Image 1: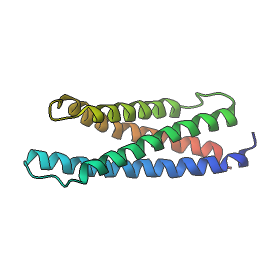
Image 2: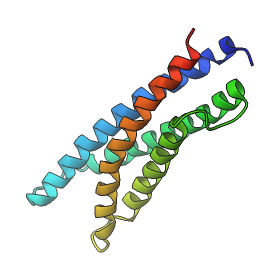
Image 3: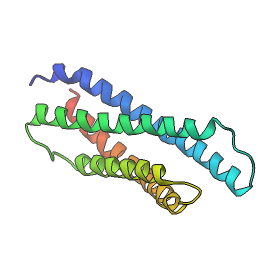
Image 4: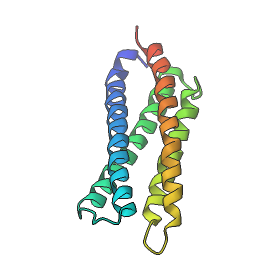
Length: 145
């Protein structure tokens, strides 16, 4: 396909990645706030956990949208996948985001062990986001004239 027809796709990807990183930052802040209130045995605002979940679902949606855009864009431009390590980085981020969200849904007063998985996965996700951002920059250079 002709490159200019893909410019709208790359714009969506750029916005989605930026919003994913913003969501990750907001999730970290609200997560630390929830952890702090629990550790200090303070009362948590009633809106904090639903906000954390809402931002999390937005991030999951954005990351899945990025996966779809990456597959469509790469197949459309190159005709096959696996043109760079960006595919591995992206798939790692998708798996980590899904593992994080899945473990978050399992956390409860009687079931605290998924919290460790959730927090550990989110720390690994920081490395994944850095890797996918760095490899994504090299992919962007291939598409720009």
